[in-house]
Length: 478
Ligand code: 6PG
Image (cartoon, rainbow, N blue to C red; front, side, top):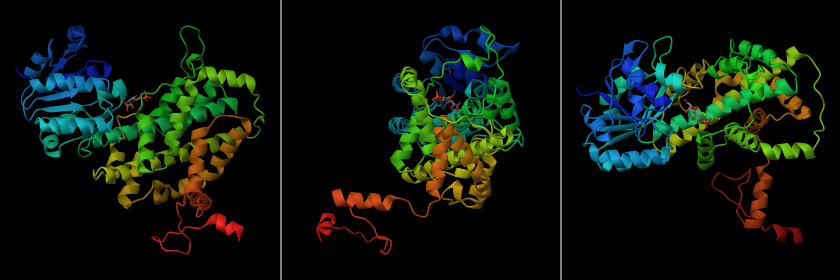
């Protein structure tokens, strides 16, 4: 009996996806290049339940075990491995077969692979999958990109069944668009994830270094925040992380973890895309820079011995400081999402994807790492105005940002006075101040460019297409 779908790659995510599909009664063939052992009984039979999963020792047997058109899901580390797998597998496939890459591939690689596969009659899909190991098993958020009619006919039901559902039963999976759009949207999800994570970490660091709170006290603050407008998966796990003890030392585990962040590249890609499209996304970019700075631990240690921070110890009402901080976190979060959605808006034009921004927000309500109630408000903002330029301009967030301002400024100013690194929250506020300024300093900048390079400028009393150049040194001599 042939299987409905094949899963290539049995790392933790691959195993979880295979079990997820099998638990929805789909028959699944699995293949893993190096570790056939993983396909044995403990994987296929779990908790007394036998899943319709069959493992195969060779790629050929795996491919031949699939019903046609074959549907192969790749869950392997993004990068060269995908190209190598395609090279080996495509000769074994037939025209009309489908390959869906569910890893975190770079969207331009996905566009190239889709075009290459199309020439051979194979449908290639770039599918963003978020939710980590647990989400992959119980229901991730899924962002598929590729041929729409093939998606509707052969993948939609499977992906809908696998995906997370909201409490109202709405599925967190929706066709995104052509070629690399699914992976693009996942990349932006991760860029926003970087922003969310860094903003939360800055709040933690501020409470620890400036307000001198204990881990237990901070856990309580995050627990309370999770009951309000900041309710989200990341805030929830943060409050739990702060209470976890280290088995080896009995200390709080968070205190024995080295302060050096890792990264696999999706936040960096998001920031590069922002630069490529000419979109200001300082909250997201700064969250990547913060990881880079954390990674140079030895250099930081050296610098800390050279300089003594000239700071003032914070004094004041803790209740007020925490309220201010909550405002700073919330406002920065809004700006981070505004930047992420701004990149999506511009990308939709650049790559001709016709992205539906409100629907993308809905996809992220459950299953994924940035899941939060907050995303429903983003959907509202786009439902009210489909051509919304920025979330900052929407009625949905206007009042929140206005109210948050005072506490946000106070938090940033305390951080600066206390010598506490808070670059993402600070840059978010700076972005807000820039974005809401009628007149910035670029008039002087344009004058400088015109002076040294005759790059021209526009005048406040000229029309949009009129450009001017001044003989600056000539003027000086007069
Ligand atoms: C998800 C996550 C997942 C992974 C990130 C981590 O949505 O399930 O985003 O994709 O956790 O890639 O990325 P970094 O290692 O770069 O933090």
